[in-house]
Length: 178
Image (cartoon, rainbow, N blue to C red; front, side):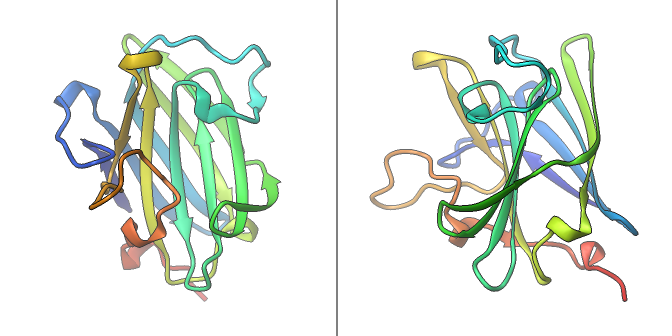
């Protein structure tokens, strides 16, 4: 099992403990099991029913990116009411296809949102992986972009979550067996 903590703004400023989000990643026979715990900010929800929702990054959302050694990567986003979006990308921002996670469950307990789902083996990039995770919430001037591993740097004035150079190696415990 591996844990990713989203504990800073996109450019590296620490955020208060209650604003942080925690992801637990576990390799299972069918793929990668993902669980998350995050603060529910109460932002407006998409008008679409829960399920696949294009443009989800415009709402309160968590995002997990997993990149393989060949430049291909996946982006999976999920919101506090069961909306999600899975994208396979062949290169920087070049969407190849969409996919769904299996067993998506989202539950709000008090001010916290807990989610769990499975990213199937067939959607995961080849090993070794690098990864990053993000949380987005708020509207207008109060919109916040948080990252497990900051994506800022010299000359960077806005967040770009597709900066694979800012991803970090995945722990060996997530390596596929066999």
